[in-house]
Length: 281
Figure 1 (cartoon, helix red, strand yellow):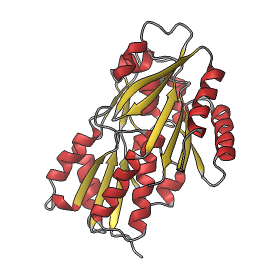
Figure 2 (cartoon, helix red, strand yellow; figure 1 turned 90 degrees about the horizontal axis):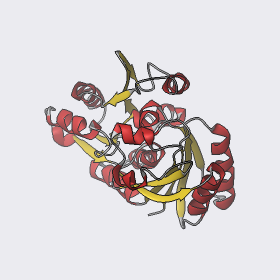
Figure 3 (tube, helix red, strand yellow; figure 1 turned 90 degrees about the vertical axis):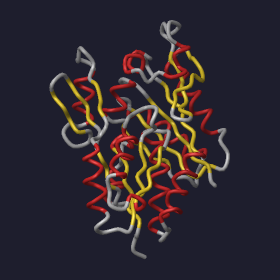
Figure 4 (tube, helix red, strand yellow; figure 1 turned 180 degrees about the vertical axis):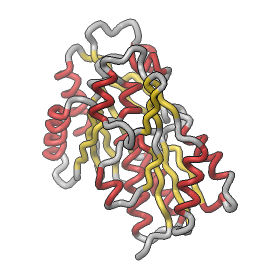
């Protein structure tokens, strides 16, 4: 059955090649800015190049949301081929991306053909919602049903991440309730969750191996898991190890591995590792 609903997301979903090529998702890029140099995430700078620059850059890079025009172009192009669009984006408390999408929607001749979803998430956790929306669209679901599939996935998704330092999120202003950990982190690794678009402190551990173990223990305690994923910025071996152990815990669940891209890397720094799970509805 031909799809009647197109799916749009943004580059902070940290897409795998499968998501773009096989699932047919349209990706609107955010931007990373080093001084006077502006790069579109996923297009103008590779993730490897970004992290090499990040550790050397003073001052730190900044990020910016896509423009309203970026979304207008994507929506208008897709609406020539599809009946409607569901556009799923990084949490509004983390970025102005959702607001730009809403503004673009209002500029359309028939804005009711586009639905915007604030995922309240980022990266691998947002990808769960995108995948659920794509599956619904491929099954022939209508606009409201595809939107509901994405929103349902968000409600069933949980994320834990471990940072090497809170310095990057502090400087970027996205620290949320994790501010409670500032000033107490001499050689301590913070484990955070992302709930309702805000970072929450969950636990502090003394060593990185201990932190990895604690996140894995949290993940395998989850029941009725449909999807799972691991993300990393600069530690692929750790991510692969967590993936293999999750596959042992959830033998019937496909575990994706993704690399956190430049936008998330700007605000979280190198060394971040995350684990996400989505339960069945």
